View 1 (tube, protein in one colour):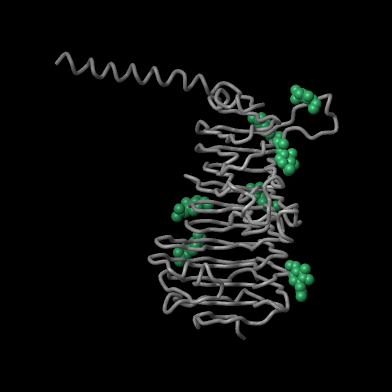
View 2 (cartoon, rainbow, N blue to C red):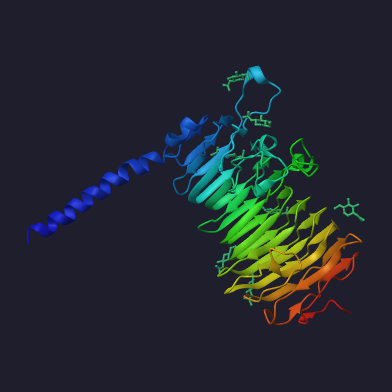
Amino acid sequence: MVLFPLVLLSSVVVHVVWAVPSSAATQCTGTIASLGDVSAAIKCTTIDIMSFTVPAGETFNLALEDGTTVNMTHTFNMTRVSVTVGDIAFGNKTWDGPLFQISGDNIVFNGNGHTFDGGGPFYWDGEGANGGVTKPSPMMKRIWRIKISGIFTNVNVVNSPEGVYSVSNPGLLTMSNLIIDDSDGNTPNSKSDGLPSGQSTVGFAVSTTKLIIENSTIINQDDCIAVDKGNNITLRSNTCMGGNGISIGPVSSGATVSDVVIQNNNIIQSDQAIRITTDAAATDGSVTNVTYSGNTGSQLRMFGVLIDQSAPSILGVPGNGVEISGITFMGSENTLFVNESADNIAVNCGAGSCVGIWDWSALTINGGSYGPINFCGIDGIWD
Ligand SMILES: *[C@@H]1O[C@H](CO)[C@@H](O)[C@H](O)[C@H]1NC(C)=O
Ligand SMILES: *[C@@H]1O[C@H](CO)[C@@H](O)[C@H](O)[C@H]1NC(C)=O
Ligand SMILES: *[C@@H]1O[C@H](CO)[C@@H](O)[C@H](O)[C@H]1NC(C)=O
Ligand SMILES: *[C@@H]1O[C@H](CO)[C@@H](O)[C@H](O)[C@H]1NC(C)=O
Ligand SMILES: *[C@@H]1O[C@H](CO)[C@@H](O)[C@H](O)[C@H]1NC(C)=O
Ligand SMILES: *[C@@H]1O[C@H](CO)[C@@H](O)[C@H](O)[C@H]1NC(C)=O
Ligand SMILES: *[C@@H]1O[C@H](CO)[C@@H](O)[C@H](O)[C@H]1NC(C)=O
């Protein structure tokens, strides 16, 4: 009878010991002006990030307390009057990253228009994720991992070595007003054999639930936004330029994608505007309920809309292990201008794996000609 209250008391003591430093920590404002400042700053729930260069081969890792507000901010340096400060650079080294990583729940991260410069030209060789003899240890992983819930806004990224954002948020996350500018990667360099030097520069690789990406601009050489798994995702009012458009897939074995809204995006000078691909060899996957409305596209080089179950081939022999249903173009008109030599619509389904009736009544295609279409459940566009 005496032991029982003692046990209770000791558990109360332990609780108090933990709670005191944690609530004290939330009172402070952390300032990060070098990588060495991070471990102290992340104990605070208000953090300012100044301009600095992350040493080569190290990750700028923000493992934040829940509820933290982070601002990128200006510092005034009288000896560098004309230089924009408040930006983050990374030392150059061939390693697989990531360069920056952030985690935490209920986070507000405001870049205030400041820039993360990935140093792309140091890495670019026209090979991207496919390696290449002159690049022994290329950046094979997505270098930016965003694993937060809350708001991530007003951040610019220039010259990503390879992919930019890899998103797997644990709760509702809104990413907005982001700029990715890999336009320098369009230019060939001495290593790229005449090809654009930047390759595999996927803007957002999304594998998640409850995500909104909006009001962002992506100039790159690969998928603008690619969703390979997840549900309840809204991609709204983004501009994509130069790459492969907005993509679902490639969907692989066991993966499901559902309830995706793709709305009011503008896709220009890209291989295609809209694409859904599934792996030919995949089993037990599905893509359900993807709605396109109000999107526009122009100068589309290969396809307007491509639905293809033969990945990694393009319009190859399709598999039927991933069921696709409920792909609709409804609501506000979607209007695409396709290059003359391109397929404006191509649909390559496996036997029995595209199902239901797909309402495409809000899709207007200009230019190009029909590619192969082997699914007869598409409604509303042929008249
Ligand atoms: C973060 O920046 C915004 C915009 O400049 C400003 O309104 C806000 O007060 C800043 N917050 C903190 C915690 O510094
Ligand atoms: C200001 O800029 C000068 C010249 O680039 C640099 O040497 C100095 O470290 C900077 N000072 C601060 C506080 O950032
Ligand atoms: C990394 O290399 C790129 C391209 O050569 C260069 O622009 C950048 O300044 C370098 N970064 C650093 C931190 O030296
Ligand atoms: C989908 O996400 C929205 C926010 O974008 C959220 O309010 C809603 O609860 C989510 N729905 C489901 C079924 O998870
Ligand atoms: C995106 O832009 C629209 C239109 O300007 C605006 O209403 C909306 O608030 C913006 N979203 C965010 C998260 O800033
Ligand atoms: C399709 O997805 C939208 C957006 O998430 C959702 O509102 C709607 O209920 C879903 N429709 C079906 C039939 O599940
Ligand atoms: C096809 O689109 C590209 C831009 O993506 C454009 O530069 C080119 O002139 C177009 N070609 C034709 C034949 O329209």
